[in-house]
Image 1: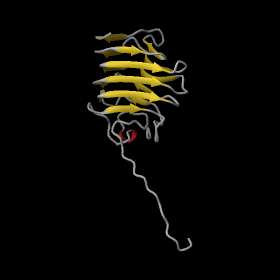
Image 2: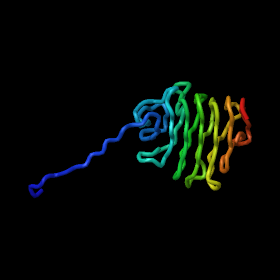
Image 3: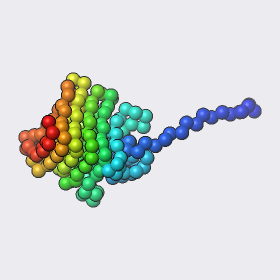
Image 4: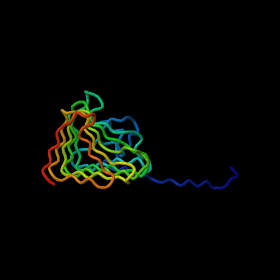
Length: 178
């Protein structure tokens, strides 16, 4: 210090509702994993993207333990990456209710980026799956007792993958659209 003034530049960050950071654990229901420290509700648009500043540090799990709430809710779910992929797991008999669209896009460098039903239910209106041709945006089912209910359409674009057999066991997919 030579007697001159010290200047610091401080940039404030505005928390974004529904932005998954995975900063604490992989638990959907842990508020410390969300940018605004609030677990999403039925009016929250959820974004899981490991590329943005403070990107998703780890995968997200609905039902990480049997002690978590039975249902997670959001108005929409957008999973996109241009780098390392992240996955959303639904397990332990839990449900994810998306009251709008689910979009999974993988333009990154990870072979798998998407949603996996390990033991649970996904309810949504529409679903779009896409990738860059090399890496896939995927929806995967792993048990025959799982259920995916889409009351609208499913669109599988280039690089999108719908895996209903996950280990050859099958499952239930109900589509009301095209």
